[in-house]
Image (spheres, rainbow, N blue to C red):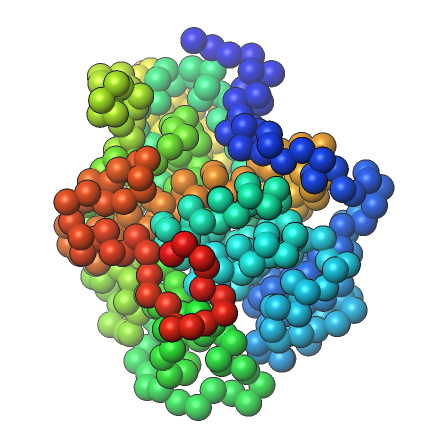
Length: 437
């Protein structure tokens, strides 16, 4: 059944709205014309870019930047015209003038830093994937609700006008019932080579950088950016870039909970280097629907497919990263390159349009949510749902086995080894270990 634009907009914010309904006056603390004071934690390329972008908004001010690498910290301070730079994120959280923090650290710090920030009364803009593992993601949701904080995940497609319009078209039945969505991550990444442990650079506090993760010696090819490809610190390219397409796939399918099964393949087929994550994935995820048994029935189940080839010199469906939605009456292609393309039966062209994803719109939405006017487009519950798909895909790859997942308990059933990967081991006694892990 087709729905009006008002009904669509209401539904896209329904999950976040319901979750935040209990936040009450806490989200009204800042007036519409007041500046939101921001601290930026993590000053790599993404963190520095976010710092500059927030600094450019009329109702935001970047007060401080934070990174264990003093050289990166100094560059970010200058770029964002921040008042000060610090190495330890606790100094940012202790600053009473700071209303919100941006977390653009390596993945292993996302959950612990966000939870600590909520506990300190800060709103949070956390980069994707929001968590390093499934358990941390759930604890992040609970911390946001318990402390009544806005937590926005950096999947900026949620604030893209053209993608929101494409999702509205899917809801309106442009291609019938959407039963399958494909997320594609097809691009060429660099070989990180082979390296051995060495002394950290003098301008880096490596102990702070490792944080609550188990301590391992410094090694150049698992440090800046290249940490993405190591189990201790990253989530692979499925979490680095693929999570954007996974999030849009979930959105287009119209699923709000967690998948019940993950099946497929992930391995290194191309790169002869030290990276631990696959360069190639073919994994499918089943969403069961709302049947009485939780198993769903015909017409209720939905399937999300993730494909990755980060050694690819060519495009698939005319794009390197994007989505394809398969409906009972047609197909939609959505991504960089093709933009938005809708086809009917026998691939009859129906509609074609451009696509422009703006970072600023997502940050604008975050500030507006803090001021109480709107709901965050990528609320932490939404981000946790996308990150869970990432983590399940990695668990399938690491174990070489398909898994059955209990969507309510958020645990893998019948495979204790695989279930153990829903959480992680921490450095004993570290101050940033989240409670409840």
